Image: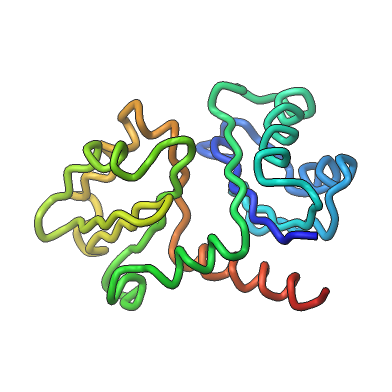
Length: 186
């Protein structure tokens, strides 16, 4: 049985597509997933399954609009293995996420798009934004004191944004901790 992270894109953002984490957990358990754990209300779920990442993704994307009142065209699910999340964290750029008092660091997870396709949507502002391409992700860091000058909002307004979901570096680290704890309990 594998340990997986689900990143649900498009739920509980700006008051739209509201999904109770309690109801989401119940739904996933009814689908037969084990040890379902949610983390904060932004669509982070860790669970165990015998299924492949593609099977998990297809089943959850199919049930979400049936079970919850959602604008289904915005709902996507990214299924990440423990090894993949560990590699994302291990491959971070040097210094990334290490000065939380100075920088806001985010991992932009890519869904059905390669980093090479997504990178042109970014137009980092010198002295404010920094971006790095990774395997299935883009690392984005912005100077907290100048965050209102960041060009990340330009990406959020672009068509390619529908193939991305963003998690803070702190959330990404915490999700790995949850996955490791679940995997070690086996």
